[in-house]
Amino acid sequence: MDQLWANRAASSEAAVAQRHLKRLWGLPGTQLGVVAWPPTRRDAMFGTWHYWWQAHLLDCLVDAQLRDPQPRRHTMINRQVRSHRLRNNFRWTNSYYDDMAWLALALERAARVAGVERHRALPKLAHEFLEAWVPEDGGGIPWRKQDQFFNAPANGPAGIFLARYSEKMRRAQQMADWIDETLIDPETHLVFDGIKAGSLVRAQYTYCQGVVLGLETELAARTHDDRHAPRVHRLVAAVAEHMAPTGVLTGAGGGDGGLFAGITARYLALVATTLPGDGAEDAAARDTARRIVLASAKSAWDYRQTVDGLPLFGPFWDRDAQLPTRAAGEAQFVDGAVNGSEVAERDLSVQLSGWMLMEAACNVTAVTAGSAT
Figure 1 (cartoon, rainbow, N blue to C red):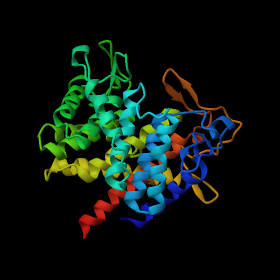
Figure 2 (figure 1 turned 90 degrees about the horizontal axis):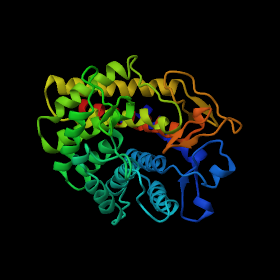
Figure 3 (figure 1 turned 180 degrees about the vertical axis):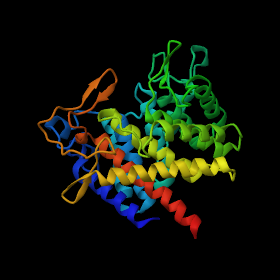
Figure 4 (figure 1 turned 30 degrees about the vertical axis):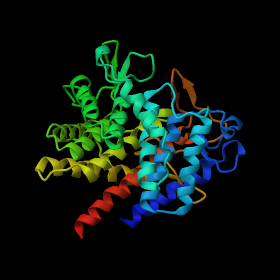
């Protein structure tokens, strides 16, 4: 592993731990991420609950344990899992399939990488995704329960989870095929957001590309079915052209958007490290994915602020980060999504994305170092 990126990932982890990690309601043996720094009193008391941000915090802790296994971090992962369920009213589930998919992915990795297991959680979440499959309604699985919006951010991560956890390859492949048939822009080859009551929602977000890359790469590696790798080749090229035209992934502001580019970087790193095949197109996809991750990570690091010796990342990795203050306007929950704070750097999502990017850079340089020796 490249020590430079390992050090930067460790600094990013320390920054989030110092500014955001706190006991839930002061209870011993608990820990969650405070959603803003500096926090309001409501934030510090965990009056604000963003389920899927906490799932990504757990995923980042698992990344760190993979990079540098520590008994202390094993404890942190266990506390994060326990506290997630506690803050979510003693349940693993909620009404949003995309939220549940992010938690399922993080819990599956926590069990596999860190040995932190919750034996009831994963079967329960897998059941939710399998039961939600409704091709007769035009899906896919919907974004949330009792909804007719079928989108990539629900089907992509749920498909990755089903492929990894339950070996439900057929359903994971059906999800990938549904996305490929329904949501691919014929002009740019990017992934559209979703389909609502039969009409395309044509927004193209970075993380939609990321989750589809993750799903198709996972299936290429696990099934050896030859329809998946060409989709990865096509989508990596589209991301490079349209979503990283300068080499650096485009940002999407704060709030929920703060996580988008980090998620994309995570799954580009998966392409770089996991996409099988010896062909020229396989090698080109891996190299391009690796190049975008490293260029983005270098830029995000160069444009960071430093507070108490630790990094503070911006929502756009190609411009200077700003220092947030408590006086600036807060993130707002509107129609099932979180809009960013006035200064987006305040949002936990933005800082998690930067940390996720540094861990992704670690992963792609670890593989390169390994293959060079």
